[in-house]
Length: 85
Image 1 (tube, rainbow, N blue to C red):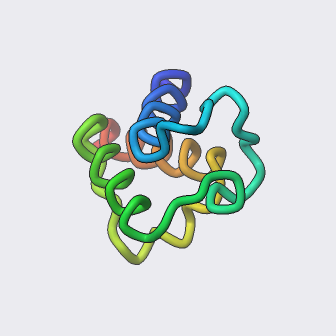
Image 2: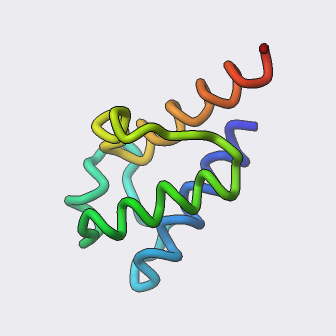
């Protein structure tokens, strides 16, 4: 599942920043430093990931989504929590 989530994250980034090659993104660097996205782009990415994965991401958690790895880990945890209930 982790690979599927990473693929979904990279695809969502590619949709909001088509000029970026997702393969060049570093997992541990802040996304906004690697990709020129504003808050609307970020929100669109969150909405896209919600649609794609069916995971709710409350606004209060947006600060936890700084890097690609942060996003993937967060979504993995949310998917795992949802499937165990």
